[in-house]
Image 1 (cartoon, helix red, strand yellow):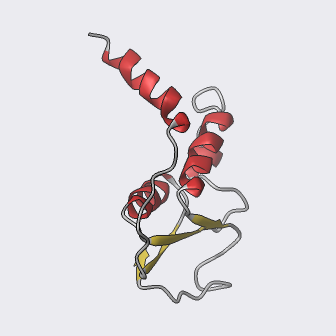
Image 2: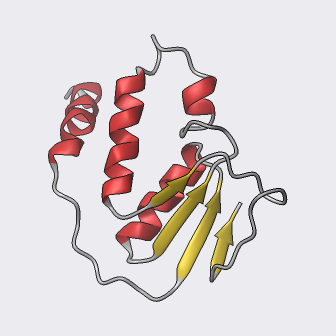
Length: 112
C-alpha cells in the first residue's frame, strides 16, 4: 500500500471539505505566533468551538513556514490554502502585532 500517495490525496483534497458547524463557546483564546504550532492549535481549538485570535509579529502569516522554507519545498499557494481553511473555521489572524509592544490581551486563555 502506498501510504505516501494516500497522504498526498488527503492533503490535496482537504480544502474541498466544507467548514464544520460547531457550537461556539463563550471563551476566547489568543495564540501568539502563526507558525506550525500556532496554526495547528488554532485549527483544533476552533474545531472545538473556541473563539480564536492568532497574533503574528511579522507582516505575513505562517511564521517559519512562510519565511524559512524555500518555495520549491513548500509552495506558497499550498500554505495560503491551508491558512484560508483555518480562517474559514472562524479563526481571526492579526499581523504586525508584537506581544508587549502593541498588543495587550483580554482573553480567557493564551497559547505562546
